[in-house]
Length: 65
Image 1 (tube, rainbow, N blue to C red):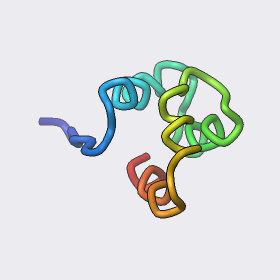
Image 2 (cartoon, rainbow, N blue to C red):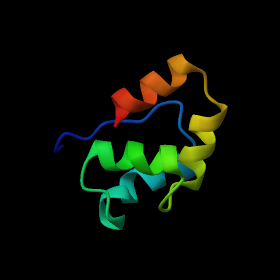
Image 3 (spheres, one colour):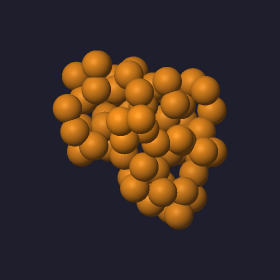
């Protein structure tokens, strides 16, 4: 396998959004984080996860990216 990482604790929709992020104009983790904070792009489920998460959950999301 080529650096495949299993995303535990993410719904199918959240995993799909993260997998497709690079195809939707997000060229780096920083772009994705900016998109989450600004609620831009096709990251509806990830934005919801971020908004509802604790600071610890959000730290883990950043590490995942």
